[in-house]
Amino acid sequence: MKQRVGVIGLGIMGTSVTQVLERNPLVDLKAFCTLKEDRLADAQKKFSVSNGYLDFNEMLEKEDLDIVYIATPDWWHRDPVIACLDKGLHVHVEKPMTTDIGEATEIVEKVKRSGLKLQVSYNHRWLSAYNATWNMIREGQIGKPLMGYARKNNPIFVPTEMLSWSGKSSPAWFLSAHDIDLMCWWFDQSPIEVHGYGVKKVLVERGIDTYDMIQGLVKFDGGAIATFESSWIYPNTHPSMPDSFMEVIGEKGHFHLDRKTEAIEMSTEEKFAWPRSLLNYKVFDKWVGAFPSCVNSFVDSVIEDREPFVTALDGWRATAVLDALHQSVDNGGIVKVQQAPSWPR
Image (cartoon, rainbow, N blue to C red):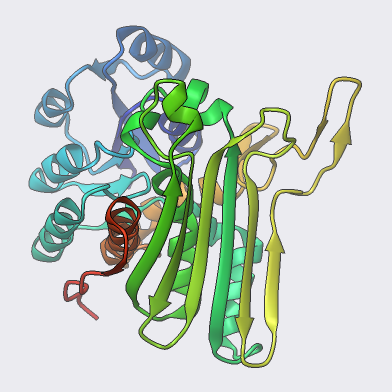
């Protein structure tokens, strides 16, 4: 039976989600919601969806849905997530799950009580290299992981032009969230404390009150440590978005993952670039890559009645690390990561 699906948020990610759902034979795309009338009209026409709303509560009241995909800005996930769960709907929400640890805990507890499914869009778990790394660590090929390093940096175009709401986020919320999720997944250890530093200069001078860059050191309960670096003030001439690198060092070996090169190297008279093709790319009439695999996997989890491959607790853990990191950056010193809520096994 087809799953009746609605989408809240029609920016870059919401539109990308819709492009995937439109081609899923197990999905009946029923309704859209966004705050911008022109964007709503364009999406309804492009995807032949007649039901459009400017208020997600109205959409949830009027539409008979099974699943809702939420692609609102980083800082505005809690309200639509809770409203959907209150209506008995399964939820796929963009990363990070929230930018507030109290909100994240509230969501975890509601998911536990309801028995509904919630997946956070940490789609990098579906990238073949990252998934292979997880499998090889589980097989013991490098022994116990002891140290990790992750860098994810963007050109300044992202906070100044691509995102209208960057002042309400940070490079760590926007970029390091993926890397923190991956490292926790690979290590299979719980983060316990964070020490971070940040710099505010370039973006503040442009009228955007957020950090240019953040770096944090995280300690895990199994003894491992990991460094997370994020910046979004690279010059716009940089050929990669993002400049992404990860490394794990274990007792008996290491993994080195440099994703900025993707699979294609290209030079023209205007620029040099590595066009992105692994996360989301249209091949003939269908979207392929880690992003569509993540989106479609959640539909499968509902139909198959299984736990999603990224749970609400996984989303909580990344938010908890980022919450502690920002406390440390703002106030100085080492900050303890909150203890995770209990979760069904």
